[in-house]
Length: 195
Image (cartoon, rainbow, N blue to C red; front, side, top):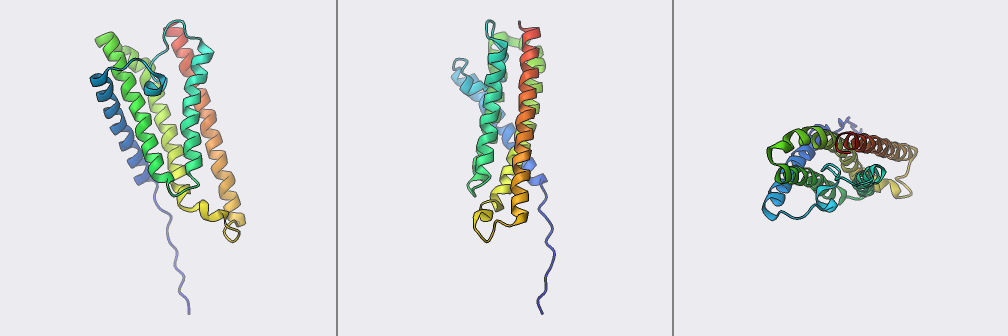
């Protein structure tokens, strides 16, 4: 007689805790990098977390910030199909934190203690929301990387796997829409306060 037992699904808290810790590490590394190296204001480094500079078009700023968010989410979505997706998502989370840390330090270097209010108003809300969206997307990709690829074999692509794949796509679509909303609100705040 065969004994079949129920195996409980893994808890998502360790993944979320790990991703948040990696974001904090990325923030610290980005801050130190920006303070020590003092590179110019590059979008590759600050990832549009730093407030818009005068003369930048509102729509262009929103599109660029949204584009970077979509780039990170698309990479996570694709990595969800591979076992290598787990370490890549960890790296991406640290890279997202790096941009936040570099932005905060760059603002402090440019404006001194006056930057505190600007960081609270411009950088912090977008950073918190972006990290939450990344955590949700990367968590899904990390969970999916464990089992999604097995569903592509003829025996493994069952009706259950088709449903999982559709749900996976819907989750990332919703995260991209939320990123668009965050980018639009961030651009509006920058336009109102920075001009």
